[in-house]
Image (cartoon, rainbow, N blue to C red; front, side):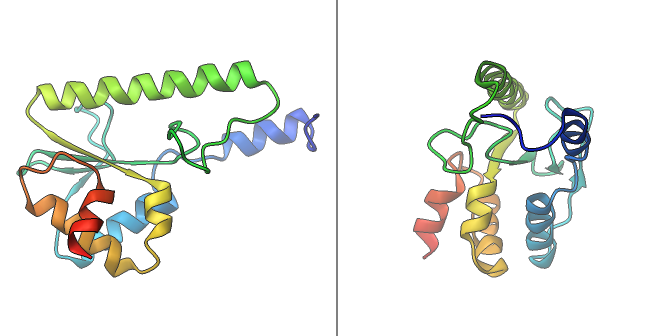
Length: 154
């Protein structure tokens, strides 16, 4: 199937996709701020440049879009039907880069949380997202994802 827009228009559209201050990221930041947490943003001195950082707690949070980071078994992470080889390679490279950043941070003694776009969307109310994030942050032994936290607090 061919693209419905011109290559030039597609290029403009792709160039407009942001890497920082995305809607999912802003929603997570607002939830954390409303709970009284203060944090740093986009620390370039840390592996992977985490979206949200709590230096005192040594916690790094990545807010990942399901498509761009190749979220496995997620309906938002469908590979496009055109140029499939390109997209499979690109998304696989993104997953490998994310894994390397997480491993590097863990090696440095940081706790890492990946908040997926689909999870953020599934939280209908901001309070639900805030409670899940707070529960994970306040338990220093937690290494799992937010889905298990939601099961625990609901």
